[in-house]
Image (cartoon, rainbow, N blue to C red; front, top):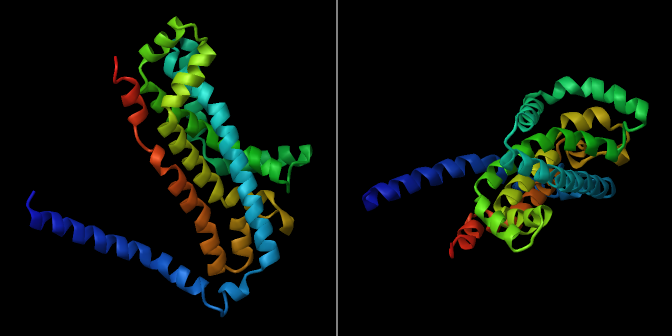
Length: 250
């Protein structure tokens, strides 16, 4: 490709990015105004509580989803049997099931269990709707790790569980990071389930609080910050260097 062609593509991408970022720039600009919707209009007490609720629910969703999905993904990747294939089909069916169809039955069930209008109840729903996708994301990542690495660890006296933790998970950091970020975004930006399950203002997540505050631009900017921070922290793990380094001497 000629230099002129490269600069042309760069210009097109630059223009497209600028157009896509215009709404974000407008929201940020309005957020720092001291008029209606700006920093002066933020309900500071409730906003901090909503922010903390969102962090707690999202953090628990990410941690539990990864802890549950990692062993399940390992079984799907390494197992070869009808039972495993059936389990894989069930996980896929759960992933394909529309969430809104389960909201009413879940609401009735959680109401009987006293979990409506509670952050733990909302977290359980988020985990249930997230874990299936995380399982498939981690299965793909584990498929890329050669079995020879685990076999070498077994020959050195490592147990199956030990090899899973020391070899598979260690070389699966890019997949774990990607699945974790996906689970974070899914739970952080969710609105419908939270709107139905939460009633008390003190239990609102930031998304519901943003709607209750009339779409405050300042709250919208506050809601953007954690996903950006998560990406900046974990972006260095989005590579396959770990597996490449492990295979360097083989």
